[in-house]
Amino acid sequence: MRQDAGQQTRVFVSYSRQDSRFVAGLAEQLQERGFLVDYDLSTDDRLGINTGISAEDAWWTRLEEMITAADVVVFVVSPDSARSRICDEEIAFAQALGKRLIPVLCRPIDYEKAPPRLAALNMKVSFVEVGEQHDAESLQLLTDALRHDVHWYRMATQVTAAARRWDTAQRPASHLLRGGALQEAEEWAARRPAEASSLPDVVLDFLHLGREQEEEVRLISEIQGARLDELREIVEPYLLAEIRLRERRASSVHPFHIDEFRQMTAYLKSLLKIEAKKWHPERPVHVQATGARDGYADIYQFPCCGKYASEFGAQYPPQFSSEGCRDVPEAIRVRPRRTPSDWHQGSILLQLLGEAEQPQADQHSD
Image (cartoon, rainbow, N blue to C red; front, side):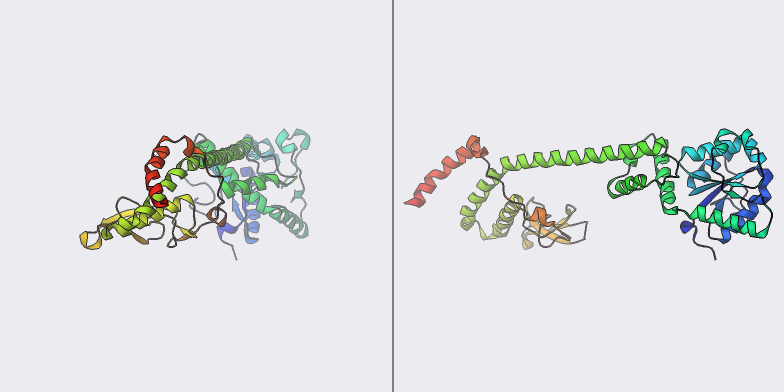
């Protein structure tokens, strides 16, 4: 019973056409053991959509795609494949991508005359000797080799493909990995098996620039946080003065506007300290406005959860409230107060406001 193609180990077979019969038999046996075998004359997919080469494909481009998509590359060694320039280029391309390469000997060759790339391969699997028992042992040896650390090599396929897409697209920053995906890829690179080829330069660049981008994002976030803290130190006295005046004037507000007045005062207080345990991650969208009967309210809807909120005047509904759809992290919700700002001592506006309030304060003290 065959597995789903997405769960199968994908094997690309590089070979000489003189060994087509051997490759067809080997492919059938590997497929019976749960592998997805891909080679140019594959008949498992007659239309050439997932495996093989269709009549419409550009031949070498399709070969590159097949090798890139493979988890493992099997190179069938024979005198003909040893002499083949195309087979040698396939080995070079696979090694450039950091693919795991397993040589399989189907006919004896003169290693002293073998090209350098082929001669450097470690030949352990051989089907040269005749006999069912020997074939079964060789097939088992190949099967074990294909399944060895397959998860690492499968991840290698995904990261390499992503790196090649990024490189082909002229290396845009938007194609780089972020967050958890980048961390996972970096951990994968650190677990490279001893027998695996060195990671190709395009993958190393892909991960390195991804980490640089993450560090830049983190740095920008820290700078923006520090900048907002400084702004808060300056703005806070103004908000406190506004709230103080509102609390003094609350009793004189016309009943028709009292709800609007209280909502604005509560909103200003919420800007000084996040007390709500819930929040909406998306700003509300204006839906409609009501008439005099409903107090000239504006109706808003939060795209993140679809909830509605009504407000008076030009103020948007606060994103931080008990009606929010997401939890506010405890660390920011109970943010400790910093030392009160001394900015008010140098503020002309606050000095004038204080002078204006002084007679009223003196009157209350009598």
